[in-house]
Image (cartoon, rainbow, N blue to C red; front, top):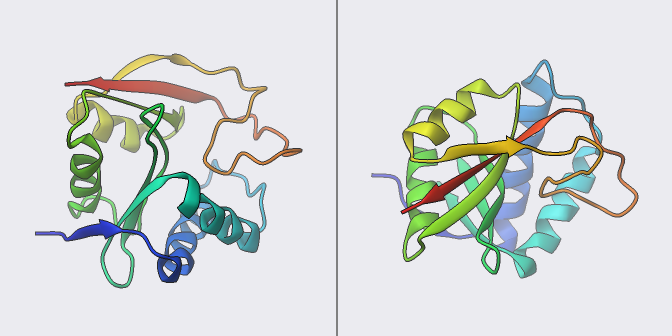
Length: 152
């Protein structure tokens, strides 16, 4: 069974490596932030979000904004190993609703979310950045995002 724990500052470099690896190996994803800026954003997020990690070194993480029950970041180093399901199960504990955004071209992620009970509710306006890494002054990537919701 995959262990899940709250993220600490020492986990940030591993979390950033997963995101940067995903960006660099995903054909349709353009890099709009330097790798060090992603690490800085994740560091700041520790105080703003409930962030869960799995593995040591980190094999996946999930970042949840508790007040609005929205998942802003959810990445796994090796999809299909159970890490994502374990992280998502942790986020669902004690909640009756969660939402997230996924890139429209990311069909594999959408299949996973559907299996986990999420339903698509609509595409987002591509002119408005909505990812975990939304920073003031950041230009939108132009990649369509799909909002999905889970209700218990």
